Length: 167
Image (cartoon, rainbow, N blue to C red; front, side, top):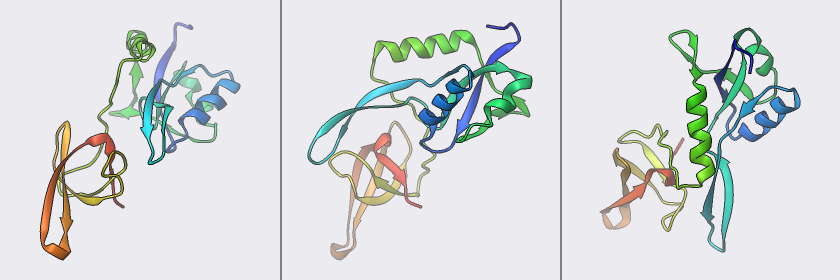
């Protein structure tokens, strides 16, 4: 590694992380896309799928003055900035992420922007497809399913990974 190169955090287009990582690799730009394996449940089957640990992000090792080159690949959006400075990640943090991913331990990343009162849809689990309102933030989000025809409201505890904001 060059002494003046660092790990930077790139934001990608939605669900483009793998393609961006591959395109960067083809251009000779070192990058790291941590992937985890999880079991997805469909109505008729279960399947193991690999997905990015951090949705919409990957790490790029580069010199600061060459970051623009990495942004030339299709699907790359921008580098993450804090107070006008490019966010960097220490080598030890990348090593820790690699170790977590390689061990295969069950990992969940809390990155949701769901707020209390927002309309959400359940996208996994036995209640998949229901829409309702998120009423409490936490590790588990409470979810209201309203049944207007009988004037009833049901409060259900749903893992956040199964909720998606309804646009």
